[in-house]
Image: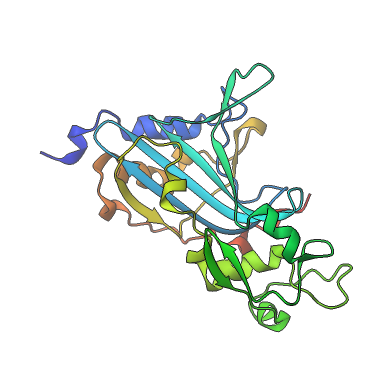
Amino acid sequence: MPSYLNSSYSVADILAILDEADFNDPYNNFFNLEHPYVYTAGSSLTLFANDEHWAIVFEKSGFSPRSGYPGIELYYFGNCLINLDKAGAYNQFTHNVKYIPLIDPETVCDITEGEGHLNSSVKSIKIHGNLVPVNQNPKDYERLGIMVNNFENPHKLIDYRSLVRYLADTNSESLLAPEYKLRMCLPDNLPRIIRINKWHHKQYLPQFKEGIKPSDYETYRMIADVLVTKNPACWKPTLPPNNDWRNWPEAGRL
């Protein structure tokens, strides 16, 4: 018997939840690679499913000038989500996004110099408990098209925005959220089907009635097929991947 016949949900069910983001709950946000408050660096999405439950966890690393340190945003969609934070004046809504600092905020104070720049003595930083080497040579950044922020930076120190983009290009695994973090809002033992690091994405801002619905193009219809069949081999995209941070130049520009 085909595996999709065992599912209690359909492709249409999945696409409906993705399309309806923000309509009924202002804190239920669709994944945004070009948010004006965050300089996007790395991104990925992970699919989980069994015969009754499905979930998509969108993941975006980057730098938020408002927080002052690099972090990860995890966006959760599915029919089985748990542990979502309450939101709204009366806690009448739920928020489908979780925030994780890439660097311990207490550590940031010890390694930061000036406005969001790394101290020149820093050789490595701890991300998710692992020591990650830090390249302090601005020319290596420039070769990748990453322009170090020189505002009030006479010594050409590496800024956090540039650092996370450099790591996204040269050590992307170091930025990915650990499995237990991905599963913060999922039921125990929900099988992981596939992690996708490159895909074709279109901006979708339903609260402003802007963008392209996920159901209107290949990427998310194919993702829904993967979830319903529980078969990663169904992921055979024909559209060129564009989730690289360079393709979203307005990110963080507010």
